[in-house]
Length: 329
Ligand SMILES: [Ca+2]
Ligand SMILES: [Ca+2]
Ligand SMILES: [Cu+2]
Image (cartoon, protein in one colour):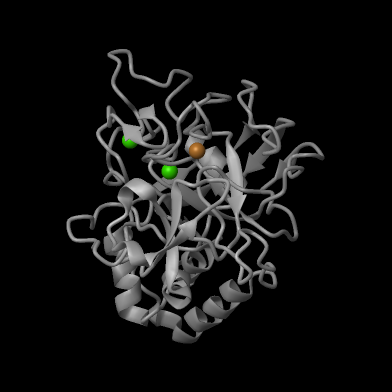
């Protein structure tokens, strides 16, 4: 899949998305072992927690807004155990504590590049390695990583309360291992994002805008991908406590940054009827991402919805993908 919203890291042969998938969870298991060897010294995870009660919800797109091929249907009844989830995505300040404690190097740092949205580029032209063919507003940029989200001339100064970005699924899993946490399953993510509203399009209801016409999430306004009017206040990421939290106390599930989930992505994942605490497909090539980002616009990508789903290869990283975590069961 060439995702309109976040490109896959090119394989060594330059063809996006063709890199062989890593053996299932190898990075995660390695990081988990490391975390367990540290035992009591597990890192301090300071993100505020939202309590999600045990319950039953309808997973999937009840409005037929779906993107063909994403597999937002059939609807299915999901029974969920209670769990605790981060009220916000992991911030740059949070990720800094993890890296300071462990010396962890992200996939982008190891590979030497990451995907930067063209209007967020802060790097000399020689750092631009290329454009992604299907999604030319994405640039492969040498030196882009979580500390330099726009490239070598950028920094995270003043962005401490913004979501960390330019992190791969492996990086998110490594953070979780350090913190004694886990990525949410896709079902946990959707249940938490819905905030107790059954079948609603957004975490706050069915209408995109507030009754006074103001924005309730950080997506794109204007002509994608070149002109953004910033009606919602933001071209790129917003601080994690922007707008209002949902009924369970979660902020910005929809918009701002895509959020990595634990599951492998498969468009047929919902077939098979009612389930309890589903872990997702046993294998795959992409990990699920949820919630859409500051780049979503109805003109080409309406994935800023509770039911929307897509995936990316686990080594991919970009300007608009981050994560939140759950307490390990
Ligand atoms: Ca925006
Ligand atoms: Ca989000
Ligand atoms: Cu989108």
